[in-house]
Image (tube, rainbow, N blue to C red; front, top):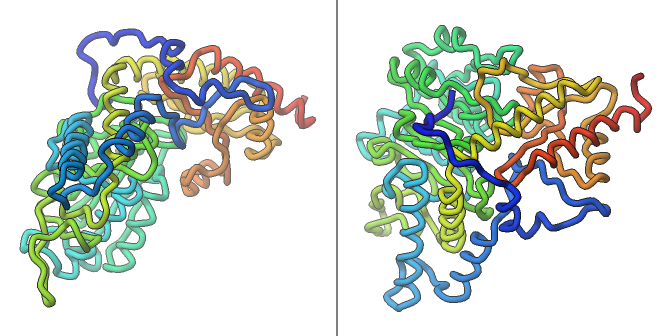
Length: 433
């Protein structure tokens, strides 16, 4: 199911006109035109994003919230305008969006804040998050390590138990198992909106309903949905969510932590220092309200401004159009992979299951890294390895796979070039008939 169904048919997206906005797509690799199918790892950047960061650094560069001079005032205004723009893109208010250095940092922030609440830190309202021995944190078998390892560490520090909702053979989350697992002991449910290995859009509403029925906190990894789907986090009902700029046409080094207002207000801070305080003495400190409470230190000002430019670019294209375009590419990609002898798709769920434009697969008799190097020799960039999801690969009996992932700038012709090259892999390595 999609996150936010389109009310009307989206305007068709023409990737050929969009490609002119991305300078790197003019590159050639080993004499071949670049076919970039690794956007799930990091997306390419349009000129509008590059120009926005350069323009700020050239004209308004200054520390925000710290100076009375003209440049500081201009920088602060641009910085907070960027927050409002990015917050609006996910349906939030500016007060509900804290900047982080990325989604991984956002997830660690939440886990460590809950750990601090367990230690009795924070306002009285923070006690609602405190964990005790025997409390349960529930994740899925499809997690990126960034939404698994912080919870492992939190469980180890607090005595909580970490449990895992299984994934079916077709890659979908086992909702029956989730319903039996989520119970009065469940305090946190963390899960991906879209699997970064399988591309499947998970049933957010059903999982949130299960968690909220027992009073559990929900944490959504939206890294692979924010670039590809219309996204309204408050409408999804999640308590907290993270997403990352560099996967959605923006710069590196910045991401967003969304939180319901009451949740952010109750969470104690994680990182401490300058910029997030109201009063400091040698003995104690009082902290600012969210989101500044979670933004200690020097701010990612140029990155926030460029991130806002990326969001405006996506809004200009239209997220319904982006999803429709990438869904068509995904169907072409998946159908083509099924037709190649010796290729095994991971999580090949039925056609009715919604997806974004990525697919991971194994080539019988050829290691994923060898597949990737062969494709690279043909100018095709894909991801190889376990994609920071080793447990999910183990679930499918693998240590590594090849992942091809699309974005709004990819064309059907590029998918065909990739499929033609992949069909040559096993013959090149002398494997199979």
